[in-house]
Every structure is written in structure tokens, then in C-alpha cells.
Image 1 (cartoon, rainbow, N blue to C red):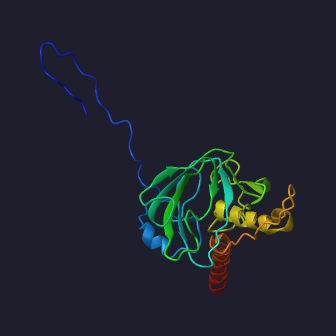
Image 2 (image 1 turned 120 degrees about the vertical axis):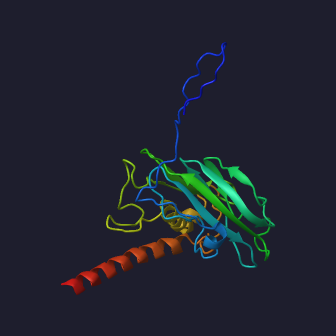
Length: 249
């Protein structure tokens, strides 16, 4: 577009051109729209990606529904990420993060239920935690726990979380195979692997003070459920492909 202003004392203005635009949709990643409330009403794990895209450079919003009850014990741990995370609270009752809050987390941060009393029925928080996957090599994550008595580190599990499309992506990482149609989300794999180490004797009994820490209950988080169901989904897809090939013979 060219703008011209007439007048004896007015010099010619430079041409104004469009320099940025949203690219057209590509085949591999079509635009999708979901309600976070509808999607999370059917979720089976915390930090569940609400869209089926998590490759290099992708913005990945992950949902979490945390709620209280007489037997709920979420425990406490720490998370570290080389990529930034943004938390949005889409609804909260009796929680420490008010509804409508938006918070940019630090690379190293504590994680718990974020409820004032996690044993109280009716307390809850529905949130999304969004990260933008790296497009370069070197993306990593770590989970760690500290002794509830002396506060020294009990266990730390650090791993490469390079997404598909980066130079250091490993298609066989995160318990999957190169033939998987639906790759495992690295955070889910890493989280359930962390729990295994946290609940082993060397992850519970503090080497600094000897205190025996509580067993971390993975049930409220569901990481192992999403990991196992993703594995089954890949196996089921391959089973149907094999059946189709047998029919065509």
C-alpha cells in the first residue's frame, strides 16, 4: 500500500508495506480449536497436551486438574526446564493461585497441588502450563526431590527432552520406538521415571540425615497412565495395520 499526502510543503512519504503475516496452515499441523474445560473433563493425567502437536518450535499447552479429598496426597517435588513455562489458572477454589491468574514460572520451581488444604473436598484448580518447544539442540528437563526433614536433595533425574524435528531428537527415547505413530510426550515419560527413582530406597532414605521420606503417590498425577495408554495406542494401531495387510494378501 502506498500513502500519498498532497501539499506544497510535504515531502513524499515512504511506501508502507506489510512485513509480517501469519503463514497459511501446513498439512502436518492443521489449526485446531478446543475448550480447555471440555478437554480436561476427559483427561487422565496432569500435564496432558491438549493438542496433538509437540514437535520442534511448537507451542504446547498442557492441562492439569488438581483437586482435594480426604485421601489426596500430591506430595512435593521440583521441576527444571530449559524452555520457558507459562501457567494460566482457568478456575480455582481454595487454591493458592486465583482464577484468571497468569504466571511465568522460573526455570527451577517447586510443584505441588497448589491447594491450601489438599484433603478438603471441593478444593480444585484447573490450569494450563504452556511451553514452547526448542527448535535447536539441547532441550533438557529435570525433576528432583528434597528431604522433608533436612531439606537436602534426595534424588534428581535429568534427561534430554529434545522434540521431534530438532538435531538431537532420538525417536527411540521416552520408551518409544522409531515406528510409533504417536510419540510419547517427554515430560510424561520423565515424570513417571522420576517417581520410580524417588520411591526406591535410595530415593526415600536421606543419605544426609537418614530420615525415611514418604512414598510419593503417583495416582493424583497420572503420568504413568498417559504413558501406558500411549504405548497401547501405538501397539493397537500397528495391530490394525497388520490385520489390514493380511486381508489384502
